[in-house]
Image 1 (cartoon, rainbow, N blue to C red):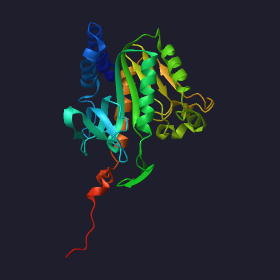
Image 2 (cartoon, rainbow, N blue to C red):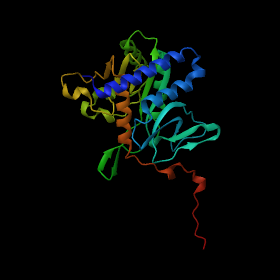
Image 3 (spheres, rainbow, N blue to C red):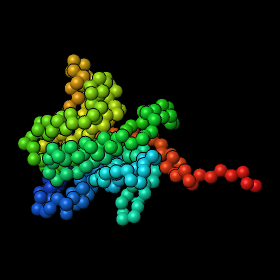
Length: 275
């Protein structure tokens, strides 16, 4: 008997596959918004916690200068207990402390797309962020970093192993703190603050993930695996893994706190002893 969850995602997979074929009929730039919205609607809308919402736009941090580069992000999963800002021109701005995960959406994945998404991931994950531990009603918890994912309807690669090779080659082009990840214990990797993409998911082809997802490393049960084996991949269940990762990241983010006062410009603060 087939798994109920599997049947659900098979149906989503069929709809996304159909939309992906349609997208190939149009230029990517014209259809980019449509494929992004279709992805979010089919996989995430209505399938995430009521405390999280889905948006798109730019992510800001408390020390950001107006001239600082801010990449446009296709899908942003954020804690809706806190506000976002809709600026002039309809661009939404999200406070980094409220963001649990980001997803770039591509119609046909190339190695250049992996490189571009990895650079955006490093930039956003390098933003000034909350302390690594925080007290809340349940006690002391780890404050998760934003997770970064890349989803594609199709790819120029022949198979998922080629995508894995692209990721490994791109990772060697810059310092993404993956060497430090190789030294970390398997049990603590889901909160490890590396700067690379957490996972690439290709419809009907599979997925490639860094062994630092928001769930326990599968290597915990296999202590004989060398620590430098940080790449996980499979040729199926790409939607299920992405959906689970987004939801688990959002659950962990629930305990984050946003200090809006840290975003206020100093010139607004006045101290007076006038009577």
